[in-house]
Amino acid sequence: MASPPPDDQAPDDQRPDEQASDHRADAAPRAYLTASRVPTLLVETASEGERIVFANPAFLALTGYDAGAVSGRSTHFLLGPDTDRAARAALVAALAEAPPEGTELLAYTRAGAAFWAEILVAPVPDTNRRIVQVIDVSRRRDAEGALSLSRQREALGLLTNSVAHEFNNFLQILIGYIDGLKRRLGDRDEPFIQRAILRSTDAAERATILTRQLLAFSRRIAPDVRPVDMNALVTEFGVRATPSLPVRITLEIRTAPGLALGLSNPRQVELALNHIVANACEAMPGEGRITIATFAVPVGDRALQRPGDGAVGITVTDTGQGMSPEMAARALAPFITSREAGRGTGLAIVHGLVKRQNGTVTLDSKPGEGTVVRMVFPAVA
View: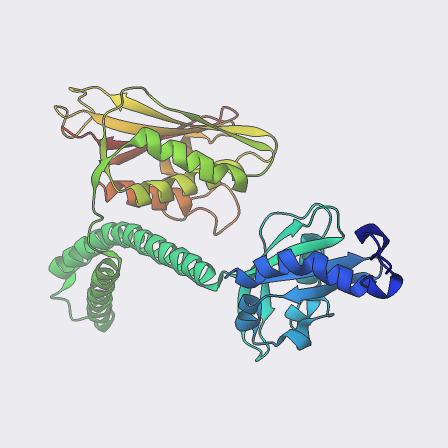
């Protein structure tokens, strides 16, 4: 009786074919992907393009497709018919040899519903296959959009408040002169004088009502202030802000050791820093440096409203073009800018943000020597 051949000499009719071998090789990763709750594709790349080898249940549940409708297709089926070239190029780049981290693009389900997808790609070692995770980040994108809109509305409120106060100052001058004209010319019978006084008085009253409405719109509950570690705040801000800065700009963070806590609202301080840094970047068309530093104002400084408590502050220094003395003196006022129209509201918003936290903001600048913006907040007693 012939003994069975060794395992390494199995007869041809017992050897698995190439397809079955591939299936066994894929068994482990497919089992892992099937168990994963992250929507994932197994994609095979070749000279003629890429095709989907496997889609896990989480991906099918996210997109509404069945396995048969996905297998063998290109990942581009996720993009809608009106997707622009930039988004298609981003998807191609995400599947490249050295993909960028966290590509986000607008994808579509089988029913045509759109969702924001973050594409994360990891190569399978020693193969021409890649694991592609398609994560729905629509909620995060919506939250970021809502936060951005909230900040824009807050900035609009601060700007409206500044404009209303300035307008009210001019209005009081006009009202004073109108009252003087009434006393001197009110008893004259000339129709023009009487009509001018009547209409001027009516216009002043309407302007007063409008100013009150603007102030009512801009007034909100004062921000909650609490003890804040300014050193930690500017350090964390630097970590978040550095990747978004132009490559020509260097950001440096300096902290003062032993700094007391400051009474402020950290979110609004960060918003003010964002505006200041944006202005600084525009003031440096070439290479430049922005330095954000914390400092302590000693107890007893007469420049403070409450000199007995002391204060803490943040300076933002840039190496930009600087401003003339006349421009620096008016830089915190609304609509004042040395650049094109519509770009001069940032520092006015900073002034409003700091003022609402019982703080002060000052500016020091000279042409060709850059600009220093100082924000000072009460220290925790």
